[in-house]
Image 1 (tube, helix red, strand yellow):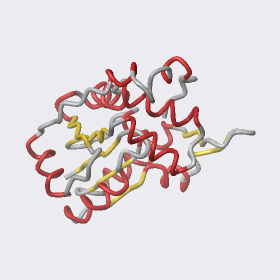
Image 2 (spheres, helix red, strand yellow):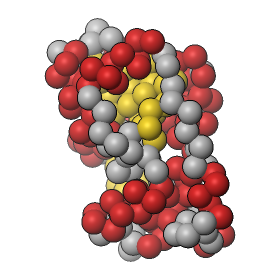
Image 3 (cartoon, one colour):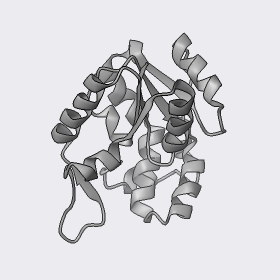
Image 4 (cartoon, helix red, strand yellow):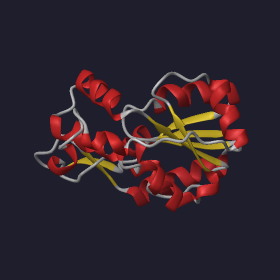
Length: 186
């Protein structure tokens, strides 16, 4: 199986991808690590954030896909372009929970707001469906822990959770974040 796992930062991609790769006895690739390894990730002057050359990253990932029949690739940028995956698992998480996770990770207020709003507005799902086609995309509410077997069954059955966080945009703590967000997102 060739599986892509994506979603906003702190949705659980790394934890879930490790467990699924082990269950599938598959190669595991962390897109952010690969981007750094191949020189596709760079910090702009005066910035804390990495900028990733998506074409370079995609090219390196395509090589990994062509060399492997069983691979799990995870990363928040993987919704931005298509790979020859059998399925794309988009992990969803309640934006209120994400804000707490971002605080624990030391994210700045703007970065936390941008990512929470991106989740509320279905950014990764919409981008993944545009890149891979809706038939390959399975969204799972990963706010609460899910077992690897549960997730694998979801992938095999192509059953998505119904997730809609948009109503949270008009309630605290998310109300006002969309208007204050600088639009950088992920």
